[in-house]
Image 1 (cartoon, one colour):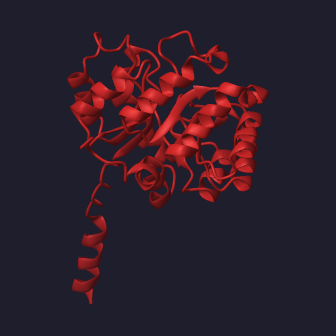
Image 2: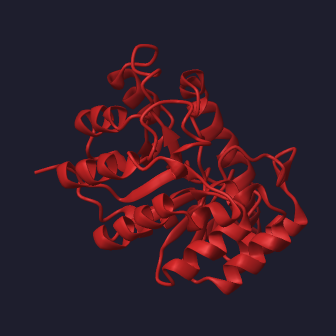
Length: 273
């Protein structure tokens, strides 16, 4: 009996094996025209691999950045078409009718998983250019990656009730509002890019924890490389994400870290052939 007890005690004293490092599906990256010289495509791909990024949803202004990264690593990069041809169009694109031929041309040339990320608020969604863009998303079966307030999200669903929308930054909204929107719209997902307000000292805020536990299938992490310099922040952001995700139950952490992104976008072809 003493031998059995001693053996049991010795087993309890052994260190538990560390949990496998979470891979990351980064649902919010940009590789725009001013990033190419600063962070060449091969370097950007190396940064993603070093960070443990499993796959990445990438957009760029203009679309050439997307295509460069996709050609460099089609098994890693999932392109989305952004309606910006250069910086400075964030506040004007939705009134610029020349945008539509550009989108139509790119959609006829390449394959994408989504349209976005684009910035749109309130009633501006109902202007002719955004309406046509949403029609194109419907025609090509694409997600909408919308940097918007809740009103604009509601208006997009009104135009296209079957839309699949990835809400950039979770709308920078409070957890109660995010939960309300997720309850109302079954085909709404949220990325957590460029948000730190839901975490303090690697501990998830209780209100956000409740939302993550209620909707474990509806969130994804993202770095948001909106300037070239932020590409060098990707490894740090991935590690930070792993630390706060460790405060959640492991199955929930795995979903937010990579499984949700893989479920939604993993079937995108890994080559343009």
